[in-house]
Amino acid sequence: MSQAVAVVASLNVDHIVQAPRIPEPGETLMGFSTSRELGGKGGNQAVAAARLGADVAVIGCVGQDEDGDEYLNALAAEGADVTHVRRSALPTGRAAITVDAEGVNSIVVVAGANADIPAAAAETAIGALPSLRVVAGQLEAAADATERAFAAARERGVLTVLNTAPAADAAGKLLPFSDVVVSNEIEFRQLTGQDPFDGNGLRRGSADLFAAGCRWVIVTLGAEGCAVLDASSSAHVPAVAVRAVDTTAAGDSFVGALAARLAELPGDPITADVVAACGFAAKVAAVVVTRHGAHPSLPTLAEVCAQQEGQPMASRPT
Image (cartoon, rainbow, N blue to C red):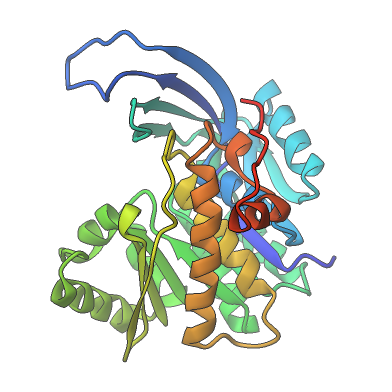
């Protein structure tokens, strides 16, 4: 197998409601529209990397249901290797997403089969992919499976990228096996107790993550871009200014693009490589937020290049 990127992936079916705003607790709002799409943080990351030209393998679990059939077919259609996606008696994962008029979303996830990824199978999958350069994971999929996959990757010298979304206690046991940690501002606060918009807080919180075992910390800051830190330096990567209509999958596309770009490197990255990869990932995320949905919003490499050149892009169907 020639896969350069593997994703230990959550694979969900998204049920999306467009509404004027995110409802308050106990409040009922009238929405504008509904849609059903394939998503899940890991699935989004895998599809994002595949559309950007990476050879991708997916390690995950779906139900023995029509949703699982649909998701496997969709991944295969993207060119992803689904050999290591298992079937479970649990239903395929689901997410309920509300998107407000400004494109901001609120998400509730039910793990379903994502919690049933066999840890031993995830470890075996890493060994069965000899061309691996990067393994990515998040906290929607079974933590034990992600930990075993990351540990196996580390033993082989394969770069590991942990997206700490959604923030959970499981992050603590994954940090020692994570070369790159990607958090948004909320997750960073929950992980470290520090404010990433404060320079001292950003450095203190990142120092805790370095002490836990990671090599680079990337904190995405929405319209403020992202910060990239190693143990001795920091850099700021600006966001690309666009009008957002839906931020669903923006963070996932960033991680998928980061993994795809790092997998292209001929050897172990240096900090300048990580900063450059984040600049590319920011351009990808800027395309995503101008479109609705998860998989429908993820661009091809040609579409990212067209955005950089100021050419019009056809919207993907939603």
